[in-house]
Length: 181
Image 1 (cartoon, rainbow, N blue to C red):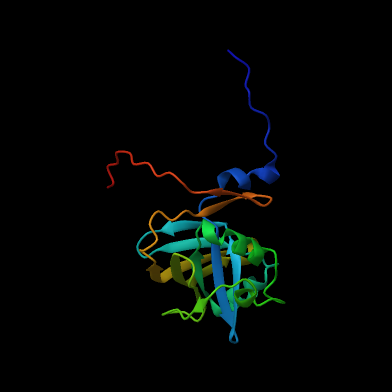
Image 2 (image 1 turned 180 degrees about the vertical axis):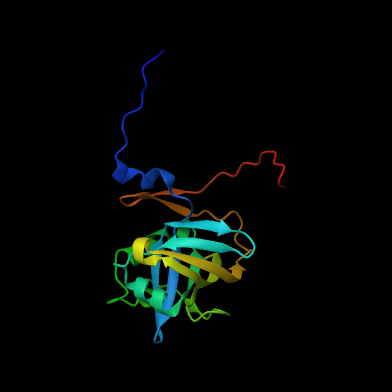
């Protein structure tokens, strides 16, 4: 048997190979002050109604707003917004109006107070439905209560965090036979 060509992977780097989906922009609003923060730690939990889980660190400015208001919008940007996404992540809503500073357009949502980011191709208005893992893990359970898509964007390419300022861009789509069409 040939020797294994693999080497150990540092546990602190596991997140770089297991990310589940695109980087999103989470918007919140409290006392008339909107904020936006990038997030890549999220997952689908259920389909109907759509339930998502997401991790927001208690070190983030958005954490307390999400915990208090129990609502947000998950906005999905395309690669064209990548530099603005990074700028949002490299600043704090505590001191910066990120919408103004980075040229993002807030639009009113239909069901929640948090704004929609108009430049994003998908917007998911969400309500927090479970906070049991917030204190331990910063893990919020969200139910999508209204969803929007810009269907004029054909083949949108999303960005996926690969750690330390590196991102992968979603590209080629393949179709394979599936019993669950």
